[in-house]
Length: 376
Image (tube, rainbow, N blue to C red; front, side, top):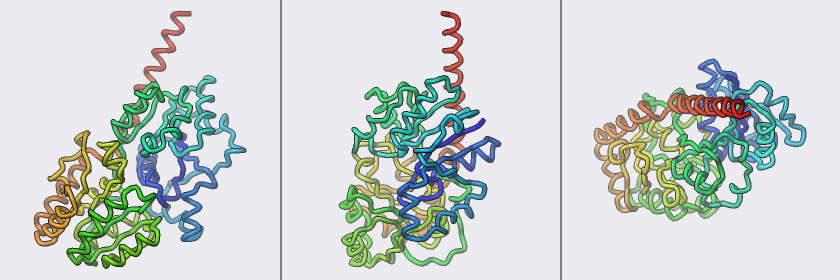
């Protein structure tokens, strides 16, 4: 099949988690013989920030980890959608696309486009910026791919979409896998972006304070760390490593003994069941993981076995100490976490799900066309 994908960026993962998952899915589709064309705006904020921080060469670095991948840059003012969409079987539009582009692609579908048209949502804006999401015109879309069941229900309950499917993110196990032979450099590593202060208190309680109290040797990677965050890290004795390309993460995890997951507040309170992609990738790399409170409402994992859960900062400190003092216990947790990923949460699994959804929607359209011809 021919896939046409509109995303914010395939080249840049600077504060852009969807690039992680998209690279894995596109790689899987290509490996199965599908034709995939990815379009991203030439002035996307993620790529611009990456270039500003690390130079233009940083945009090409991902090709070393993902050979064969590439995106087509477009200017919205000159984009010829009729040409881009010609011959497409499936068109996938990510929610960071401009509303005008989302609507224009919908009009192409409504004017007789034969492709399956899907909208892909991997963010919390449905609950944190409802007006922005309500502005999207999805009337001509065949369905929404939501990265959690609660988000799928929101689209249906609010009448934003006719059909919606749960399509969780997952780990690209071609890249994210256990690696050994690395010299240990510290006790704990955390990889994540600071963001818009939506989990500041949680980062202090479940990461910074326990590390400080235990006197651990720790390192943090990520972007958008304001001065007060950097000062808090320094006060706790935590090294700040800055931006880390996502495909280099599997090389870093083996150098530390454990990691943690600190969900953003929206996922912990308003969108239960959505883990985001970071824990998928950590578990795929076989590192013991402790999570701050997060409700696995959809039963993706077995909390307490695939990873540990700390109800507060004191318990986080206790669990960190236990993993460091009982390496066999940590190894067993890591092994179970890796098996959970390998068994049901890889990009290959999600590609199977995507193809099944496309075939289902294609069948529904054909049935509708036959019924329409019969009535006429």
